[in-house]
Image (cartoon, rainbow, N blue to C red):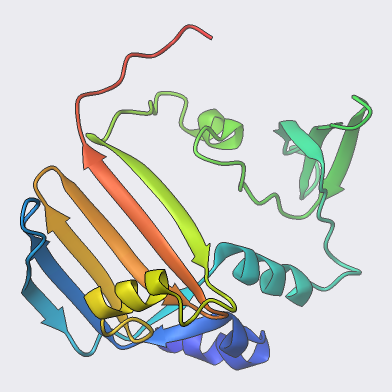
Length: 200
């Protein structure tokens, strides 16, 4: 956290993150909705950020003359030539279908959970079902701070804005915390058997 704290002011992350000092784990009775605290950490030292805000700040911090970011391209493959340093990536331009090559010093493998770059280095690594399905979202309540919904949420979670809530119930759990800019990040997990895969 100390390393991150050094980056925050220089990258403008003060405005893009919200410090959360408390981690609160609660158990909730599914029928009565009564909640009790299982564990509380008042020295949590966490910063909450919306991925879009963080992504934009990190992108803006890149030196434009030295970094190429390709939007609207599908990664296809890469080669690291033996005779010189660097990497050559091949990508498809989604709008035109054209194939292009880009040479660089570094390739960042940020192509998702089914990463084709990761598959090249770890060909035997298989995805497996973790035992639950997850839904997540961001509730933007800008201009609705006094609404019945927001008032009800704040009543049920009185330390929002300073706390990461982790609620446990039978075969389900949820995570809830506030983001900068009148937004609420929520994640809901439901345990269940592995769904059957379609052949599509």
